[in-house]
Length: 281
Image (tube, rainbow, N blue to C red; front, top):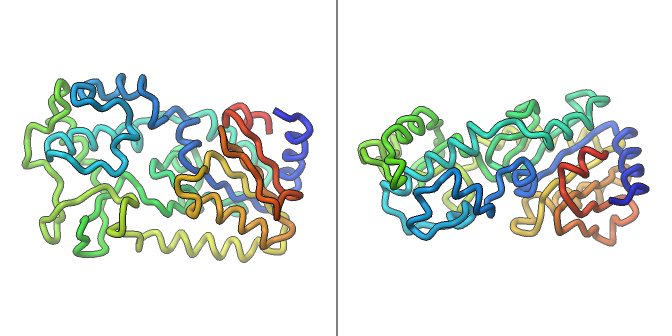
């Protein structure tokens, strides 16, 4: 960790009038929810090992399910990641970085769908999650633009799931669309069926916030946003800094901390563990 660059980044944050936090899956991993962690998967979902699965990331885009196993797994996964995972040190450290700034002068844009920012004390009115929210379901057709919460269903499904097989034993509990009776899935961006209308208000608030901040000193603090979906978090953050000469970018990434040439004089990349780097700022 370069001490000179740490001090430079500290100065940028201290002098900033506005701070935009942007984050990807690397921040979720820094909080302990690493989708590639086989030990975590074996501990939390031991019954899934018998089917040849070894990590949570294997279910991204996976569709070769039977309903009993699909919902036995997904209810437990969403319950763990979205509702039960404890507060994390890295989020507390991020929150601490902006204690000198008026709360309304901070905003969050994240591709993560676990609500960890909100659950760690960030204001939900200033959080934009363009990739969705595990707490909601939607029709996969979709027959309408509706989404709805399913936490009560999660509890019912978990109670009716055999822990030795991870299979739902009561298929009457399989979630269905209340409008057409069709197949549903958590409201996260998987394909073109994703329903995003309800996120429009937070997107509008973010755009209004950015407009207000254009003539001020600002910092984008990006954590764990790599190249899986760079158009969602990584590139927009770079564009904000490129278009606003009084803005700076602090990029924190385990392996992909490179900085574009066009903003190299107004950006710093820290490669390494997010918890250690954020705590040092």
